[in-house]
Amino acid sequence: MRTTHLRRRSRPTRTGALATAATAVAGLALTGVGASGIAFDIVGGIMAAIAAATGESGVVGLGFDWPMAAARAAALAAGTTLLVTAVRRRRRGRGACAHCGRSEGPDNVQAGTRDDAGHTSPAGGGRERWQARGAWQRISVRAGYLTVLLAAGYGALKVQWGLGGTVGLADPRAFGDVHLWTPGLGDTGVLALIGMALGLGFARTWRPPLHMPRWMPLAAAFVGSVMLVPVGVLGTGLRVAVALGLANPSLEGVSPWVFDVIYPWFLAWGLAMGTAAVGYHHRTRGVCRACGRGRPAFVRHARGEGAAAREGATTTL
Image 1 (cartoon, rainbow, N blue to C red):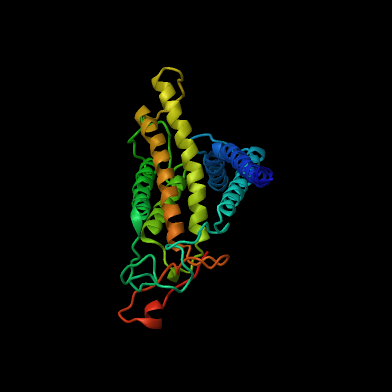
Image 2: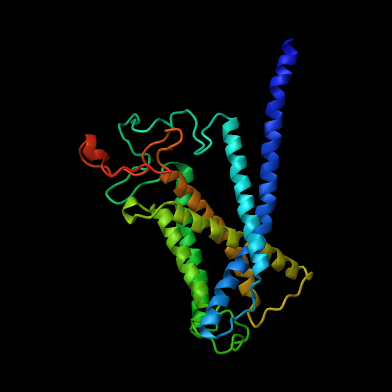
């Protein structure tokens, strides 16, 4: 009787774990298919729009295929949805909140309670800064600053080409008569500026006075990482194949060292941006509206205690 009872209880657990794993695998597969070319779709679409407005051709012929772009976007959206579903199933399976992932523990107290030191803010800080707690948060903050440096380096390369510079060109006339507004130059410089802003904001932790929903920079970082990481992985693999004599792609007048550097650069940039975004998410998620766990994301530390010390606290998802 006891053995039969245990078996009947274990079957739903195994079934649930298998269903969660299958959902995660399907999500990874669809996300990989969608992410494999989404960067070229986005950049190609931007270049096509600029070319239509200015009448100039781009420095590279990426082209833009609407059906394939739509298919990859749909695969990416479906894969992301399945991954989120798998994560939430896993959280429910271990007794945590499906929305925020918090469970009962000393670091996941109910809203409004204080720690042993009497502080109400997990982020701490002075007048204009909120400090990250723990090794992971320190890593995520440094990843934000690394994102700024990597984005600035890439943007500087593309902008100097747009201004007529020849650094990184084996043939100084490779791009012909280009301008900063030539598709593939200034526009990618703007994308680099956006990457710099994201990295700096994640490192410094954007605060409520900006009146910007937190999902906006997180969504931008997700798209940026999805663009950069697959290109970095595939491009780095291609350069390894070239080094082994297995491939001989056309360089179109660009120095080989640019490709040897830029693809690992993309990979590092995408990983750094993703790490910085995850750290920012955990620092600013605040009190969960679904389970009530957590603490206010932002609290300005005042000299006094009481209501004045908690002024500026916000509850976020």
